[in-house]
Image (tube, rainbow, N blue to C red; front, top):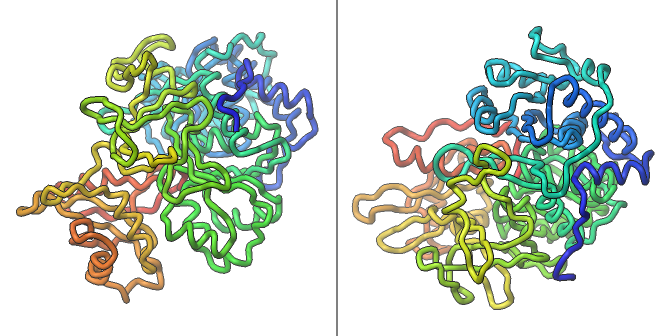
Length: 538
């Protein structure tokens, strides 16, 4: 594997242009019963870019909100914004009107492209001067609303593409541990570096057929299900949201070869009835991150289906791809090794001294795909948050990830937890992620989240919030789980209490929202009923 990777000196939209000129009739997207070729995709992108520039007044460097679920229109909108030399502000499809108002005000976006089913949330946002409504439904009867079909029909030619590799191209927002979400500034170069490294590391080429289900408003879905296929000139099979039965049909039907999916999605897929009968012989790469794959689930996956889940590690701040397990040399529950051009280290978060193998500290990283910085109000402004996010070691700028890791003698990194997610039980430090991993080995547990519960004597004790598998409901008790856990791990790590719930709260990208459970536990109120996530993802 080369230690560095060649990155094309062009924009993301330049990738689409190059592929469409090279193979205009090749299928770019399969969606439901529709097939869009690369030539058609490029033409649609050009038309919409003309509308954005000439009708909506979008200029170079302007931010445009993209608030929709996965669809070919999402792809067209994303690349049209880039073709117009503007910046995509991807918005979680589960965001409400207050969220949109914040994103619009903070980013300065005056124009938004919104799904028809979500338009009602965008209408109250006064700072949005133009709303382009995606979908077959009629656009709301407001002067600032334009239907998708009308925009494409009234599409003057766009001006020349003037953006360069170092121009800002994407401004995703990340929640962080405290305060309001922060915009993450990525250039075409930082995004392309991540993509090019991923393609080389995983030996991907133009013949790939890629399953795109993870939400494209999130960096995992955006990079793996949207930008990577276009860089490769590959074909995408797209679903608007997670549907395990549909995925089971599409993989053998289209001979899917690459699928990037978070552990929550994989666990659900392989929990469906008769999964052994699904033809998965075409699937060369099943990769993901965002959380550790439970070791018990990974072992079942390999034993039953012959598939190795290749775990990787990245953040919104690193354009997704940063670390990965070498293909064929994977280690379970592992973030892998730093990929091409990446210098990652484990340091003491207080003294900033580098720690030896085996010791737990904060992971810091220096890499060409690291963000330019957080949004400070203009494309060039420096955010005050950068002062605590970056540090200098050996003359290089390192990103502080806030993740607690350890590295082994072979250079593989292992997640221990978030810097501030630790339970102190009578002076013993307990990392919730470690306990969760062990709990997944219990045959009755479908999902688990470990939090701290107040204790008058010990200060804190370990509590597990658990979703049981359907056939275990009524036959397994919390006491059974506690007793089993004590037989599997050190007593101080084992949950003292277990609570059963129907669902765990999840973000739109499928991450379990442990902070919500922790906040509820710390308050006198009883844990609330938790509705199912609308669109599991990363």
